[in-house]
Image (cartoon, rainbow, N blue to C red):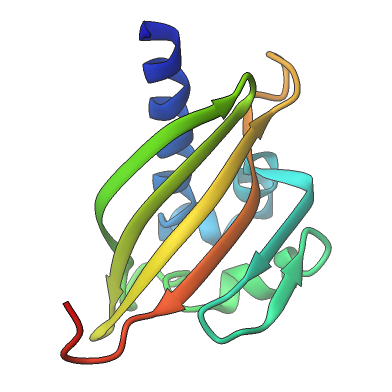
Amino acid sequence: MTHENDDVNEAIAGELALMDPAVRASRALFEPLLDPEFVEVGSSGRRYTYEDMPAWLPDHQGGSPGGPRYEPSAITGVVLAPGLVHLTFETHVDGRRTRRSSLWRRRSEETGWRMYYHQGTPVPPGTE
């Protein structure tokens, strides 16, 4: 069970890093955290791929050190299979709440854990 906890904790560390404005603003820091087959369905409903991220991520919300920051809560994870972790959590940023789900994949020890898939779903105001 300890190995599974380590895997979940490493995926959580990667998730938190991707919310850090310094990481979001640096291609050299965020690219190693994204799987080459990465896909995101953002809270806007738009679809993004690994190739889209270098242009999109630094200028997107949460990418500016002085701007609004993602405030994550209730991050939990489960190992679905060896090398595959599923995380769920919520974020609050600039008055908006979003439920999030991501899959983290580790293909090798050298590459480490990388985000393979991410989806954000806005929570309507007044919803528990």
